[in-house]
Length: 473
Image (tube, rainbow, N blue to C red; front, side):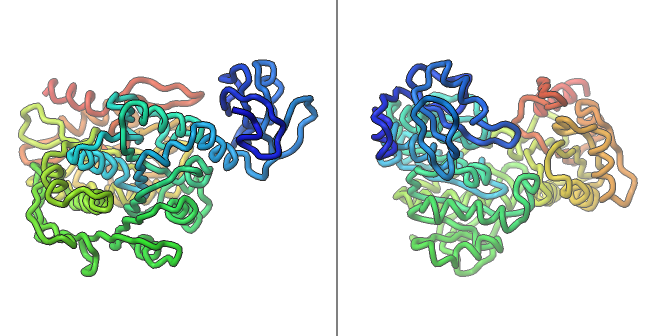
């Protein structure tokens, strides 16, 4: 391919690859000088050329004797260039994008299960893992950079995938990583406080999510009408084809009634445009019913017959780190969940309270170098909903764990325990539990490490630590 095939009017320079990281530049690559938050790709252009780059994409001309394409937004240009370079793979791959604050991972896993039950080999891109051509890979960031994303779509097609379900983060939308992706369906789960270290306001956060349905133009929008931002989105004149789901909104097309949930799962009546059916899901909690409804609505939009989808939903297993039970034969329940926002922690603890026959214990912390305003909010929620609270460390990153804990404690008006050693905190909660109790370990879910200052990441898995504590009992 030549540079003018990607950017009409540019010199006809031969291009053999695309790169945004100067350390990964190969001979005759096109290097995108992406401005970052701490570094600027323009500063690494000379190094990229020394490694063989044939041309640059810049937002201002550099004093270098090399073909340069100047664009207003390097990230957006990179996304569309990647789609072009990889021959527009999503024109042949049916892509469903799931966005929202909570529920993305579970909803995406469920949609994939329903599509696979309909005989469609389906790729997955998400927080917990990716599946490409039937091969499971460890996940990196929730939504990859545009070049990596378009390359992955090409690998999915080569591996026999006909569909792909992907989580779409607000960062990916704001930074144009998914520009150039042709979305068949977009799912909006909800919007609650998170990422206010990146988005200056909740309105900015919402507008980033909205881009999946407007700028990315998902052909069908599947929207939660019980969420106020969802209702606002559903009324957006830019959306032409909307399918709604809800537990409370009576006019939603996919609804649930008669909900009963326990440690074994949830049962409810599902109401769809094709009729009603009884459904028994192994997923517990009211919040997971929303995930199930969103997945059923999305699968229906993709042509999966409702009876096939319901049968598959009843067989769908739990997602790692998402209200995951850890059972070693003990007479109390332990649940590990990724809940790391005020809304998700409240949802998880409310669901756990409904399963509790004794006391409800919670172990949680807040991540360092992230939105600090949610720390006292999460403290208040934990103290209000749980009987026994242990505030601990999450991923402190560059911050002092004790300082993070202190900010959480400002939202708590009663005495609670605090232990910065997460392993010790989990062990203390498991040790304190009695018959009929429920222990919730919140914040890290599926994560396999704990992040400290200077980029240090030490192995840590909540589920494994829980198992060790149960064995010691």
